[in-house]
Every structure is written in C-alpha cells, then in structure tokens.
Image (cartoon, rainbow, N blue to C red):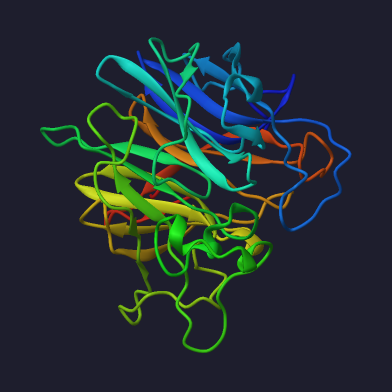
Length: 331
C-alpha cells in the first residue's frame, strides 16, 4: 500500500467528505534533531497543510492546498501543532488543533474559514475549558446537527494530569511525562467529550469522561489492559444509528473500536481495526465515501522507520451482518 502523499511527511489524517471530495487534514512531520522519547518531544510540527482528492483510486491525483495555518499565526501557541481535525457547519469550515501554550500545557484551538481548503483564521485564545490533545469533532444527523468534540491523549498528551476533574484546578504537574494510572483495580482513563456551542468555537456544556466497557464484564476497561485501553487518537463515526468510537492503544500500537447508542457513551469494546504498523504511533480516521468505508492511517515505511517522519495511507474497511467492523470483505 503506497502513501497518498510523498512530497512531504504527513500523519494523523483526519478525513472528511466536503463538496463530493475527500479532504484530509493531517499533521505535518518535519526533520528535527530532538531525540526520540516517550514524551513525544520529537514530534515538533509547526504548520498544517490541507489535501484533497476526487477519488481514492490509487492513481487519482491528490492536491496539496498548501500551508493553511502555522505556529506564528496563533498568539497563544508556543510549539507542537499536533493532530488536527475539521468540521463543517453553518456554511463555514472549522480547523481544530492542539498545541502547547506558553506555559507548556496543551490546549485546543480553533481556526475558521469559508472553504474546506482554508485559509483559516485562528481565534486568539484556545477553547475555554480545553486541554490535552487529539481533537475529533463529530456533527450528528439529528435535527439540531448537534456537534461534539472528543479529545485526550496519555503520556506526552498530558491527559493523565487531569485525574480528579476536567478543569485547570485539577491539573497535576507531577503526572507529566510517560505516566498513567496502573495497578490492581485501577480503571483506565477515558478520553473527554464536550458538546460544542452553536458557533462551533466553544464548549456548550460540561466536559465529560468517555467510558469504554469490557464486553465480558460490562465494567470499565482496566488501566493495565494496554491491549484495549484508550491512549490517544479519538474518532467518532455513525452507521445505521450506531455510534462507533475508535482510538489508539498507544504503546501496544493497535487501532480499536467500541460501540454505543449515544455520542456520550458508554461504549462497549468491539475489537481491532488495525494491527501494529512500522512506527511507534497509530492515528486514524474513518469516513464513508462513494458508498464505501475507508480507514485513513499512517506509518513510517517511506522514511525507513523514522518514528517522527510518517506518511498517510488509506485502506477499505467493511461491516459484517451484526455491524462489527472487519478488515476483509464478508463473503
């Protein structure tokens, strides 16, 4: 499977269908002298490109719309423009992005444009009440087109610093670094979700924790269950009335999914959708396009295995008669 984009390194692809085209909003990897560590300091991205294509045929051209936002454009950002996402509503397009503020704490910002390829103008401050990384927005198909943001990532993403609440008062700097809850009886930390305001630039309600349940017990997945617990890379899609929450397990390198009947969860673990690839991180999106379902992800094959130099790829996924995600087309 060849990368979709080969002239620059791209990762964490957020794919959406706008105006009958696939638009891809990835992070932009670059060369760095920063040594690899489990805090992710080597992922020193500084800008975003937007890409689009009219077809997922392997020979179809992919358009690079150029740089649409960079660190210097955003007053509150100090460094590390990590995995972004995008949404469309109210005739406008919204680019969501995490970055460290000038105190070194990850926040989530928003930039607004009138076209899916930008340009995007950032709000001068991060979204109030936001923290951690990996924003993923989901606009539901209800009458109000309710929108939700999912976010959070462990270790370098700082989610483990918010174990007692969802605000600055609960931030505990002693948990910075490659740390997370562990030990007998410890429950895995879940990602966060918040309903978006009508203008898509803030949180309307309280931030909540998303609970992922083990199907064999009906209880939350345990912290030491690294094959199934949430680590980062939240994504939400909906099919036949079922909400599919998918995510990365981080240090075990799986992409997994869980299902539920509400955008808030709880979600019951359903299985894996991608086995480990070359490279440390796994980050993805799932989108329906031209009647088929596609998994966008990345690996490090193009860079020869350099963990912070990744490339976006895509593969088709399928559903069986019970609605489970499968990687091979059912007979």
